[in-house]
Length: 198
Ligand code: FE2
Image (cartoon, rainbow, N blue to C red; front, side, top):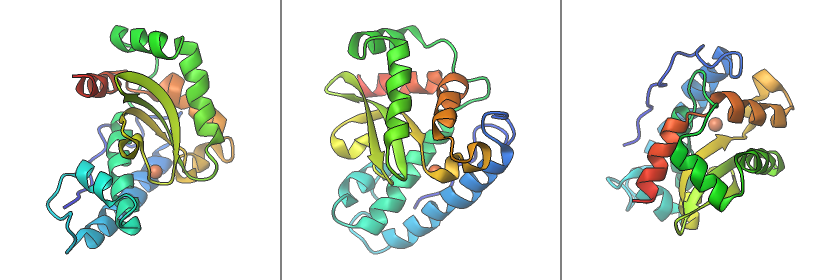
């Protein structure tokens, strides 16, 4: 069964980059709906009792309604942890080194990550993930993630309008720049990188 995790910080902790109102709607309404719908759709399927990652990977291409809700549940569980108050800033050495080696530079990473989110047409996500031991930037529509493309996500940003419209209206690039510079919890990115490269 899916359950809604608490936010790891107060609803107003990410201001001014992400408002209390955005987090109240995004976490309490949108994420909760994925949990509730996902649980209803999971009942009686072959994936009941499986891990969330197995449900996401297994239902892709086979059960679209279940996949959409399970995928979004997975994405949002991590999205809350990919942010923190006073985030952004200096990258952990290990991540910085990998970004320089696989992408070119930290500035290039920021530019390409923001561009991926900006150019995702309609709803979706932009990602930094590990594939075959290397970092790569990508974008996916709706509830998809690098998980279903043979990669391990280590950072993702939600570009559905529900994530930014209250605070940034149509200025998605401004939201993405604020995310990269002021919200990213690099400690959690490092934790996922280490798990993905073990
Ligand atoms: Fe979302």
